[in-house]
Image (cartoon, rainbow, N blue to C red; front, side, top):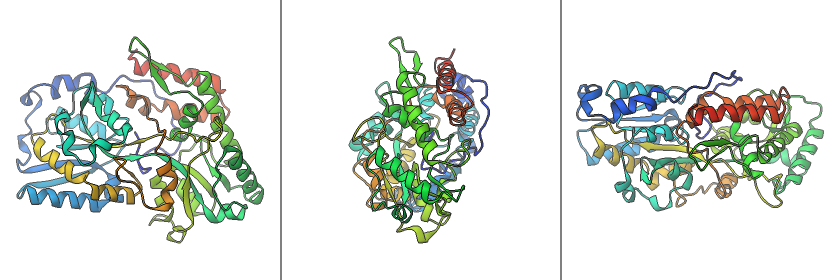
Length: 442
């Protein structure tokens, strides 16, 4: 899963847990409950018949509450007397809560899911088929391909793109200027030279990192694999999955990733990216690579408003391809209508209002990306994110990919490599084996 950078994630490294099969929902709950008649899994009649229940992640409350209010107001004008109940969820446990709600026969009518979470639920038949409704959503013909792919299974649309989230380098203009850079670097060589000058200038401060780049941030590492011509995993002709971190391209990409870390990062290599923005606010880094939400946090209420005119973004130059850029991960969120919802028409009307153009602009202002190419950021600070929309990639559309993320296989592999505990070859072989065990259900 992934969003604009505010999700509940562990800050310190977790040891790998034994790989698990898909959760009860996708193994049996969907077949035994969601795909059965409504009465088969409990009665949802206890809920107010004039109430629409919407589950959104807390990001919406923090970053674009006006969009939620506007959508609800628009819906209420169309459906007077219907109460909209918006419940904000945590990324750490919302799927478990959804599984429990389905088992109890009281699912929400609208639910937000991360793009990496949807495959298992769509494959299980948990979400309503919205194919016939696609044209009724604004700019649906221009939806971001990665979000559309996350919502599509066997040619049928099972959810609606909500917002996107890609990656770019965030930088402080003042710190780069002190190192003689009036413009951000355009090539890998220029980037490494800039890092060298920043390192020399701040040699006396061991807490300063020219480029904040810790080891547990998988969405900063995996782009280098794709940049080198590799992939995380590909589907074989027989339908099984082949994990590819240990391929020559995968190992080469991770070597390039570690080269940037070795050159620019002096901090704890076992942490993730959640302190990137605060490190920049404190003046202890000049650059970091992350989602647009982190850029907003630098000068937002949690950061320092005085930095608003001193930050910007640029595309990360490629170390593997001359004149090219590292392809950005494209994640984000989607909105689905569970098949158990008793108010599908209302749910669709609320989603239409929430994903309307005016609200898409609010998502962009809050640090996300609109769900379509028809709405783009006008803020010059977001330049790198807009330019990074070309050549994006997403995680494999595999039914059990969410289990790969839950077991922390990739972050743990990266920490092993970053800290030198395990060689790239050994770490990637072990990770590939664990990933294939989950994806192929072995």
